[in-house]
Image (cartoon, rainbow, N blue to C red; front, side, top):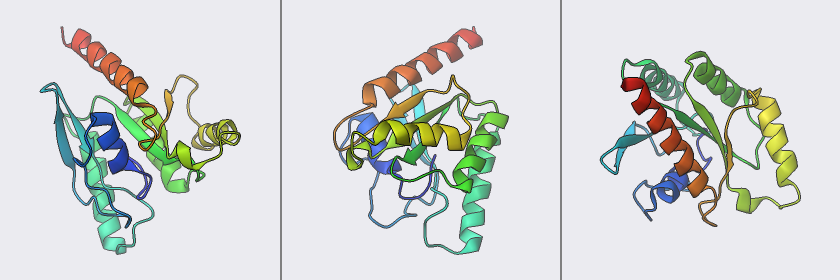
Length: 173
């Protein structure tokens, strides 16, 4: 989950090792439903509508918010959530609210800083600290710098998902 225009579709394609599975667009707010991707017949990766930036009506924005909240609180709720943030932007109040919702739901949460190729390498450590501080993340929260364009962060994200799946399988036994 993340704001509109933070690179969710590009990161999904990168994460899944596919070129054009998730539709990308220069215009924010193109993802309007929950999009499910079955991964290795083992789990679903779910693309949620973005929040905060898309030029849509207040009514549509509220409907997306209800959809996201219902999904996160459902009986078959997600095992874990990646919260995506464009590294070039400071977290907004919507981002902070999303993280609070996820922490309150006690869902395993990881943060993916997207588009790191578009920020100077010397500024990245400061940007990471600012994101972590603004969101008020617990110290144990996994943080993944990513770039779909440069192919960065995929292995680390896949390893975290594997660890979450293994923990869930142990809990089910």
